[in-house]
Image (cartoon, rainbow, N blue to C red; front, side):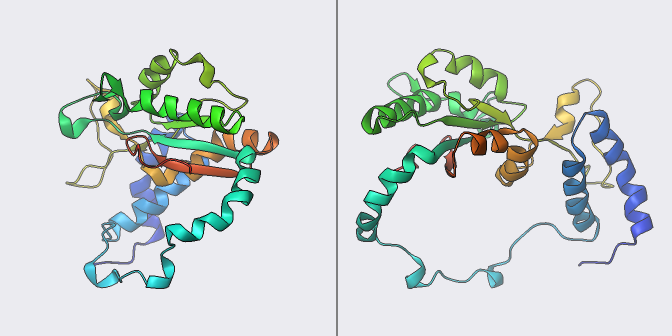
Length: 231
């Protein structure tokens, strides 16, 4: 059940979140974004999509592999204006881990980041272009991921190798107030999800950097989706 929330009530209930985020140095744009979602939460929305709202994809909306050949020449022209962004903010918590999921071994002693790095270097060799790799890390994965990729110094490009997605304060289910864990303050926060990439690119300055270097396109996929590569 959704209810209309009075502005005065929203302001009062959101004040502890706003202060907490401001004290953490989180940009006003991100605080406003969280407020937008918090208003929906206290109004009764839960961010779920019902089966009634999901409709099948029309046949005409699905591209056939055979259609891609016509774009080969154009693709070869714009690849020099393209960066590859990997969404690397997830932890292996569902598997009992507390490190970046991309550091889990996949095959033959190689983890996801190993394979991603080798894919990028292979792309560069094939096309003769230094295609940038950029990771969107979370505050939980950034340090470990950057440390690991030091073993691939050739990955460096004219764009920063990584940027941080933002973090949102956790909300207690009981009363929708901010979560509080003094013994482990990091547990009071969570990454806001992959959709944060747009705001994180802006506030980190990486988007401006890409544009200033002449990049116009980005190929984006999850770090654990090794089949999601630029063709």
